[in-house]
Image (cartoon, rainbow, N blue to C red; front, side, top):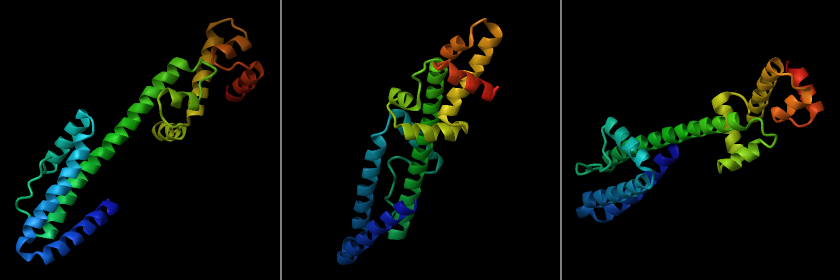
Length: 197
């Protein structure tokens, strides 16, 4: 928000210089600048999904604004800055919240994928990230942020839970249970199982 405020300040400093040069058209220059800025913001908003546009529109209305901001009453730079910052703040907050929601939705999709594939010995953070066309580091961060456990720990815990269940419910040998939960190396499976049970 600080960066946005400083950019708006710079724009209006240049606008003030233009207004001082052409004193008779100062308010017209200010309104033209507002129209230009609002048009750019609207282009950004309209480049988002229909769902995001509706969320932004609702947020603006809740904050006392509309998508087609009425700047006809603007007669001074301080008033223009105040209106514009309020407008931008509503949109930015909405976009931040929407982005966070999408991150959480992505983690939910990844959890479904893990739950369906944890028995696959090739399941890894990198492979899962590739499956969802996202960066592995990014997936790791949002996963840990939502679940307070790393991707690797989560998969490992799922495998161990399933191993305990298989031991209790079947007559499978240790190496068969390891393979069934995605741990191919029987020695590694035994070490992991003994360490965690």
